[in-house]
Length: 103
Image (cartoon, rainbow, N blue to C red; front, side, top):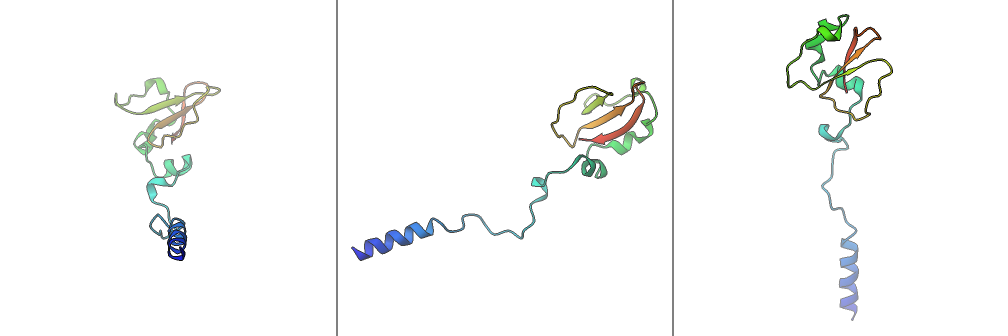
């Protein structure tokens, strides 16, 4: 009976052990969420290639047909989903591009 109880106790304690491999304390880069500023600084969406468009009207801008672009005008509601690969063209009330950001 003691042997059965000892085996049961050992089995119960082994279930409490570590089940995932130890890490170095740093999360993998893919799981660390970026902020919009970090995504823009890293140019994840390719904003730098369109930098010359700042100051021009967005209606005159041309982009590849498969580009992931969102135009944000003042007062326009936008979703809060974070897509660092998406290029956001922020415009003023006259449609002039004021900034390009990744989020």
